[in-house]
Amino acid sequence: MIVMKFGGTSVESAAAIERVAGIVKSRLKRQPVVVVSAMGKTTNLLLTIAEKAYTGDRDEAARLLEELASYTLQEARPVCDEADWAEVSGFIEAHFQELSAFLDELVGIGEFPPQYVDLISSYGERLSSRIVAAAFRHFGMDGVHVDSREVIVTDRRHTQAAPLYSRTYAKLEERVRPLAEAGRAVVMGGFIASTQDGFTTTLGRGGSDFSASIVGAGIGAEEIQIWTDVDGMLTCDPRILPGGHRVKIISFGEAAELAYFGAKVLHPATVVPAVEKDIPVLILNSRNPENEGTRIVAESVPCANAVKSIACKRNIVVVNVQSLRMLMAHGFLKRIFDVFDRFQTPVDMVSTSEVSVSLTIDNTAHLDEICAELRKIAEVSVDSSQSLICLVGDNIRETPGLAARVFGSLRAINVRMITQGASLLNLSVVVMDADLKAAVEALHAEFFTTLDEKVFEA
Ligand code: ASP
Ligand code: MG
Image 1 (cartoon, helix red, strand yellow):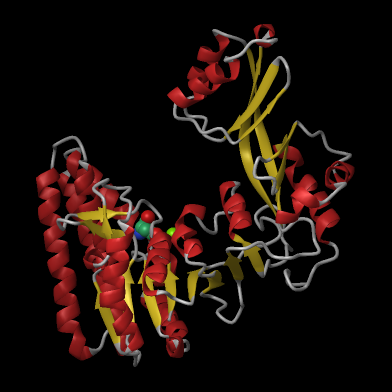
Image 2 (cartoon, helix red, strand yellow; image 1 turned 45 degrees about the vertical axis):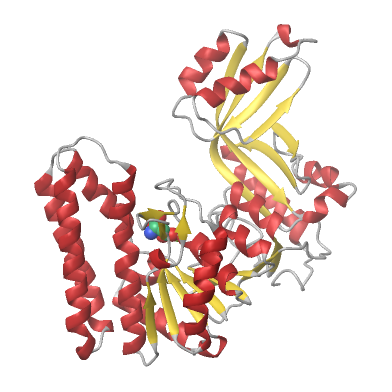
């Protein structure tokens, strides 16, 4: 058994769904359980529509809902059998009527209670999973739909619910596993779940990867495939520097580090259930299905290269805090971090000296207030338009002379800040945005001119 997860773009249209059906069909022997996101931008749209309703713009909400309904019907039609269409279109229409009734309850109440956020956003995956199951039948498979809300059980933290694993795994084992073993192409919606007493919940935005990982762990899948629109992870961010090499295999720790520092491919927390059961997670490209993608595995992978990949975050801000009072004092760092905490601003990177601290942030919504607070206890300066470059690799901790290679290759560039992450598998530097491309180019040439072909595609 394998789990195959397809995101919103992979099911955004009739043509995209047909592509998905082709990919699944060619892998039927492996007994796939398919997890899908909502079609295209449906989740965002549903939330916008709800916002129109609760802020009192019922007409605009109704108009947008109508548009979403016709888009859904229009893309579903070509992928459904004549014989199925009455049922599928009836289902879609009934769901939009329900949605419209819920929106009526929200009109003008001026807020969006979290139970309603979950209820309304759940329709995206409820619709897409039904439609994809019907499409599988249309394309000659034995497609069967399972409502994820009947098998994935969570706590009551609406919009960020956490699975109750043992119950969920028992239900997956009982309901989903036998269907897959019987050779049926099971389709489930990602992102959605329910509480023990049956209230609809969601696992948080982008939660379908998490769903796939939960389902894989619950049915004991041999592999979890996350189908996206890139060929897996690369040795550098293609938006900054084209021509990177595909990383064929990477450890969970490395993948998490990369995701944290800007690689948008996968949220690290989502693969935890898979890692716990030692199930590999593959990143694959639905527009290039023969490519073998990136395999994420629990253990670290022997590799002749010191670095696996270079991630970057553009447009970050460095906040420098300096105070003579810090000399020999304790509790100073705590006071500084308390300020960032109070304004709910995550700090990515920190470096300290005896009398100063530099921190980087990428959320600048509260920068002015943060600086005003910090100025009460220290001198503060801010450097904007900076970039964080992060070298990731399990070997970093054991490679002597690595820092010398990093600085040697960056000799023409002004490096603003340096840290070796506490995880020991990353080494990060901050440079000006204007120097980012040149810096990544130099580092990439230094670390990826010769490649371990077991790990990288040449
Ligand atoms: N449809 C949900 C979202 O847009 C979940 C997902 O796509 O993973 O956040
Ligand atoms: Mg996604």
